[in-house]
Length: 116
Image 1 (spheres, rainbow, N blue to C red):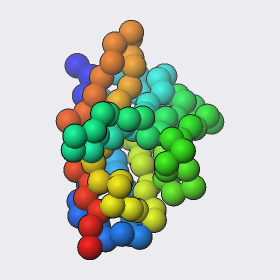
Image 2 (cartoon, helix red, strand yellow):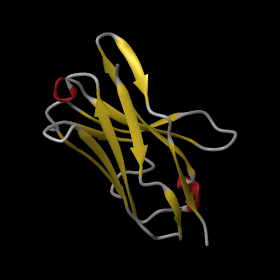
Image 3 (spheres, rainbow, N blue to C red):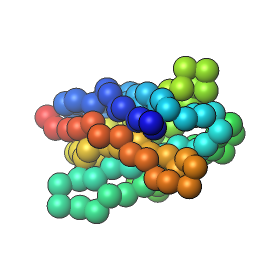
């Protein structure tokens, strides 16, 4: 079955960096786009970044443009979100997601906390 497993979250000071990883299995990873979402406490889930199946097309939320970079490795079936210049407002649970075979799939999420 389709599985998405995030890792790499943690506690970081403002201005710091983290790289999130998403390990995908159970489907043809390289045939589908993927996205990163986040949900802060008491907030709605929001789209952070998305990348096409080939990696040639990437899109970002205005709030993270210039600070976050989405990427993927279709050989290793991995997705990544490099987060630089982190701000307290980036604190959230981050999820990777894909739409494959007409269904939405989500990982379990990884907590990112930006605090001094």
